[in-house]
Length: 177
Image (cartoon, rainbow, N blue to C red):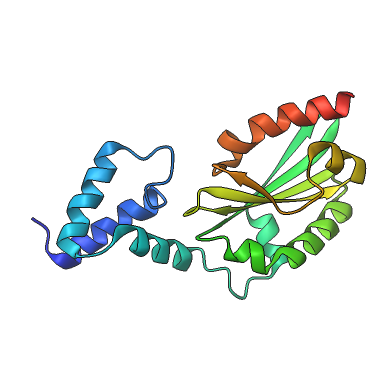
């Protein structure tokens, strides 16, 4: 049986790896281990995990211009180029407090790099949702429903798995019209 310190360390590893048991890759074994270890460590796992995530994703002092390009992918859809960045956070606070700065930096980035559209997903891993910010042609943003930003995307945690498939399909439909 692990002592309190070892249980805390193991618990931190599991909670970090599974983003506080919120990722689709979380197993029943992960949940059982968290229950067992949190009892030994006498720690409430969601609160502890949230603190870990926020510390690990500390965005304080990092310029928005840097954050929106840290984790970015470029896509070609219907002969148009789209960039989609993702910023992982431990709550919705960053999206709320930085909305204006994100939108301004994203507009500069999109125009300066010649993208037809640029998107930033600010993902709240604890709340299991993303906040979408987009820059590009006003008509295209309107057709996609992206004028009122941020757009709240419940359940969207993964750009590749949760966001891009439906976005890509919708984008193709809108552009073809």
